Image 1 (cartoon, rainbow, N blue to C red):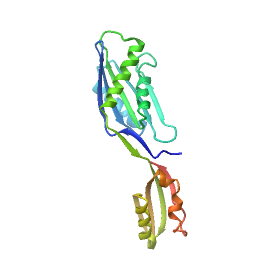
Image 2 (image 1 turned 30 degrees about the horizontal axis):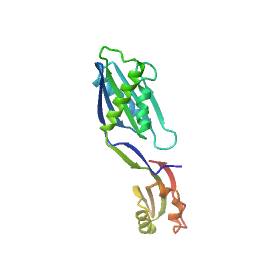
Image 3 (image 1 turned 45 degrees about the vertical axis):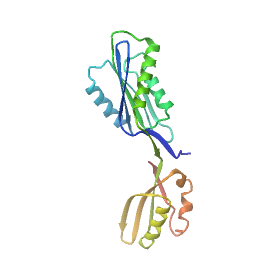
Image 4 (image 1 turned 180 degrees about the vertical axis):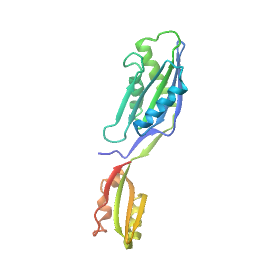
Length: 206
Protein backbone atom coordinates (compact mmCIF):
# COMPACT_ATOMS: atom_id res chain seq x y z
CA UNK A 1 0.00 0.00 0.00
CA UNK A 2 1.38 3.38 -1.00
CA UNK A 3 1.12 6.55 1.06
CA UNK A 4 -0.28 9.62 -0.63
CA UNK A 5 2.72 11.81 0.16
CA UNK A 6 6.07 11.97 1.90
CA UNK A 7 8.35 14.50 3.58
CA UNK A 8 11.73 15.57 2.25
CA UNK A 9 13.92 18.68 2.10
CA UNK A 10 13.47 21.19 -0.69
CA UNK A 11 17.13 22.13 -1.06
CA UNK A 12 20.49 21.79 0.73
CA UNK A 13 20.75 23.38 4.17
CA UNK A 14 23.54 23.77 6.71
CA UNK A 15 23.84 23.44 10.48
CA UNK A 16 26.52 23.86 13.12
CA UNK A 17 27.35 22.48 16.57
CA UNK A 18 30.38 23.03 18.82
CA UNK A 19 31.56 21.13 21.87
CA UNK A 20 34.90 21.31 23.73
CA UNK A 21 36.71 22.80 20.78
CA UNK A 22 35.36 20.35 18.23
CA UNK A 23 33.33 21.88 15.43
CA UNK A 24 30.59 19.94 13.66
CA UNK A 25 29.25 21.21 10.34
CA UNK A 26 26.09 19.59 9.04
CA UNK A 27 24.64 19.47 5.54
CA UNK A 28 21.36 17.98 4.39
CA UNK A 29 20.57 17.28 0.73
CA UNK A 30 17.59 15.96 -1.22
CA UNK A 31 18.78 12.82 -3.07
CA UNK A 32 17.10 10.26 -5.31
CA UNK A 33 19.78 7.63 -5.89
CA UNK A 34 23.07 6.40 -4.50
CA UNK A 35 25.04 7.88 -7.38
CA UNK A 36 23.98 11.34 -6.20
CA UNK A 37 25.15 10.42 -2.69
CA UNK A 38 28.55 9.31 -4.00
CA UNK A 39 29.03 12.59 -5.88
CA UNK A 40 27.97 14.73 -2.92
CA UNK A 41 30.28 12.89 -0.53
CA UNK A 42 33.17 13.32 -2.98
CA UNK A 43 32.48 17.06 -3.19
CA UNK A 44 32.21 17.35 0.60
CA UNK A 45 35.58 15.64 1.08
CA UNK A 46 37.17 18.03 -1.42
CA UNK A 47 35.63 21.11 0.19
CA UNK A 48 36.39 20.02 3.75
CA UNK A 49 39.61 18.20 2.90
CA UNK A 50 41.22 19.14 6.23
CA UNK A 51 38.37 17.84 8.41
CA UNK A 52 38.92 14.93 10.80
CA UNK A 53 35.75 12.99 9.87
CA UNK A 54 33.04 13.09 7.20
CA UNK A 55 30.16 11.06 8.64
CA UNK A 56 26.79 10.57 7.01
CA UNK A 57 23.50 8.72 6.76
CA UNK A 58 20.93 8.53 4.01
CA UNK A 59 17.48 7.14 3.33
CA UNK A 60 16.44 6.87 -0.31
CA UNK A 61 13.02 5.68 -1.44
CA UNK A 62 9.55 6.92 -0.50
CA UNK A 63 7.80 3.59 -1.11
CA UNK A 64 8.60 -0.06 -0.47
CA UNK A 65 11.88 -0.77 1.33
CA UNK A 66 14.17 2.27 1.22
CA UNK A 67 17.93 2.14 0.63
CA UNK A 68 19.74 3.19 3.81
CA UNK A 69 23.30 3.49 4.99
CA UNK A 70 25.17 4.96 7.94
CA UNK A 71 28.89 5.76 7.94
CA UNK A 72 30.97 6.63 11.01
CA UNK A 73 34.10 7.45 8.97
CA UNK A 74 36.54 6.48 11.69
CA UNK A 75 34.53 7.55 14.72
CA UNK A 76 33.75 4.79 17.25
CA UNK A 77 31.10 2.44 15.84
CA UNK A 78 27.55 3.72 16.27
CA UNK A 79 28.52 7.21 17.49
CA UNK A 80 28.03 9.18 14.27
CA UNK A 81 26.06 7.58 11.44
CA UNK A 82 23.44 6.10 13.74
CA UNK A 83 22.47 9.34 15.55
CA UNK A 84 22.43 11.12 12.18
CA UNK A 85 20.01 8.48 10.86
CA UNK A 86 17.99 8.86 14.04
CA UNK A 87 17.22 12.45 13.11
CA UNK A 88 16.17 11.44 9.59
CA UNK A 89 13.80 8.86 11.05
CA UNK A 90 12.43 11.08 13.82
CA UNK A 91 11.54 13.73 11.23
CA UNK A 92 10.01 11.01 9.00
CA UNK A 93 12.09 12.18 6.03
CA UNK A 94 12.60 10.31 2.76
CA UNK A 95 15.07 10.82 -0.09
CA UNK A 96 17.59 12.68 2.08
CA UNK A 97 21.29 12.61 2.89
CA UNK A 98 22.79 14.22 5.99
CA UNK A 99 26.55 14.71 6.21
CA UNK A 100 28.27 15.91 9.38
CA UNK A 101 31.86 17.10 9.09
CA UNK A 102 33.94 17.17 12.27
CA UNK A 103 37.00 19.24 13.04
CA UNK A 104 38.60 17.74 16.15
CA UNK A 105 39.26 20.30 18.86
CA UNK A 106 41.85 18.40 20.86
CA UNK A 107 39.55 17.11 23.61
CA UNK A 108 37.93 13.68 23.28
CA UNK A 109 34.18 13.74 23.78
CA UNK A 110 33.68 10.07 24.66
CA UNK A 111 31.02 7.80 23.21
CA UNK A 112 28.03 9.54 24.78
CA UNK A 113 29.44 12.96 23.90
CA UNK A 114 29.94 11.99 20.26
CA UNK A 115 26.43 10.58 19.99
CA UNK A 116 25.00 13.78 21.47
CA UNK A 117 27.12 15.98 19.20
CA UNK A 118 26.21 14.22 15.95
CA UNK A 119 22.56 14.18 16.96
CA UNK A 120 22.59 17.88 17.88
CA UNK A 121 24.36 18.91 14.66
CA UNK A 122 21.92 16.90 12.55
CA UNK A 123 18.97 18.40 14.43
CA UNK A 124 20.29 21.94 13.89
CA UNK A 125 20.81 21.21 10.20
CA UNK A 126 17.21 20.04 9.80
CA UNK A 127 16.03 23.03 11.83
CA UNK A 128 17.49 25.22 9.08
CA UNK A 129 16.05 23.15 6.22
CA UNK A 130 12.82 23.70 4.32
CA UNK A 131 10.91 20.46 4.87
CA UNK A 132 8.24 19.98 2.22
CA UNK A 133 5.41 17.56 1.55
CA UNK A 134 5.63 15.83 -1.84
CA UNK A 135 2.68 13.92 -3.34
CA UNK A 136 3.50 10.43 -4.58
CA UNK A 137 2.72 10.08 -8.29
CA UNK A 138 2.16 6.93 -10.35
CA UNK A 139 3.06 6.79 -14.03
CA UNK A 140 0.81 5.13 -16.62
CA UNK A 141 0.58 4.83 -20.38
CA UNK A 142 -2.44 4.33 -22.62
CA UNK A 143 -2.92 3.96 -26.39
CA UNK A 144 -6.02 5.18 -28.20
CA UNK A 145 -7.33 6.16 -31.63
CA UNK A 146 -6.84 9.81 -32.50
CA UNK A 147 -10.60 10.45 -32.66
CA UNK A 148 -10.88 9.71 -28.93
CA UNK A 149 -8.13 12.14 -27.98
CA UNK A 150 -10.34 15.06 -26.93
CA UNK A 151 -12.47 12.84 -24.71
CA UNK A 152 -9.37 11.27 -23.21
CA UNK A 153 -7.86 14.69 -22.48
CA UNK A 154 -11.07 15.67 -20.68
CA UNK A 155 -10.84 12.55 -18.54
CA UNK A 156 -7.19 13.18 -17.71
CA UNK A 157 -7.98 16.77 -16.76
CA UNK A 158 -10.85 15.63 -14.53
CA UNK A 159 -8.58 13.33 -12.51
CA UNK A 160 -5.81 15.96 -12.34
CA UNK A 161 -3.40 13.81 -14.33
CA UNK A 162 -0.07 15.27 -15.42
CA UNK A 163 0.74 14.42 -19.01
CA UNK A 164 4.43 13.50 -19.28
CA UNK A 165 4.58 12.43 -22.91
CA UNK A 166 2.50 12.18 -26.09
CA UNK A 167 3.43 10.26 -29.25
CA UNK A 168 1.37 10.44 -32.46
CA UNK A 169 1.65 7.46 -34.82
CA UNK A 170 -0.69 7.68 -37.82
CA UNK A 171 -4.18 7.48 -36.31
CA UNK A 172 -2.92 6.24 -32.94
CA UNK A 173 -1.91 8.29 -29.91
CA UNK A 174 0.21 7.03 -27.01
CA UNK A 175 -0.05 9.07 -23.83
CA UNK A 176 2.05 8.85 -20.67
CA UNK A 177 0.56 10.44 -17.58
CA UNK A 178 0.93 10.45 -13.82
CA UNK A 179 -1.74 10.52 -11.12
CA UNK A 180 -1.87 10.67 -7.34
CA UNK A 181 -2.03 7.56 -5.18
CA UNK A 182 -5.75 7.89 -4.42
CA UNK A 183 -6.58 7.97 -8.15
CA UNK A 184 -4.17 5.11 -8.82
CA UNK A 185 -6.06 2.85 -6.39
CA UNK A 186 -9.05 2.73 -8.76
CA UNK A 187 -7.50 3.89 -12.01
CA UNK A 188 -9.55 1.57 -14.24
CA UNK A 189 -12.84 2.99 -12.95
CA UNK A 190 -11.99 6.36 -14.48
CA UNK A 191 -11.52 4.84 -17.94
CA UNK A 192 -14.56 2.59 -18.12
CA UNK A 193 -16.17 4.63 -20.89
CA UNK A 194 -13.22 3.81 -23.12
CA UNK A 195 -14.42 0.20 -23.13
CA UNK A 196 -12.80 -0.61 -26.46
CA UNK A 197 -9.34 0.23 -25.08
CA UNK A 198 -7.02 -1.75 -22.89
CA UNK A 199 -6.84 -0.26 -19.39
CA UNK A 200 -3.98 2.11 -18.64
CA UNK A 201 -0.68 0.27 -18.29
CA UNK A 202 1.15 0.87 -15.01
CA UNK A 203 4.78 1.90 -15.51
CA UNK A 204 6.26 2.96 -12.18
CA UNK A 205 5.95 5.10 -9.09
CA UNK A 206 7.59 8.54 -9.22
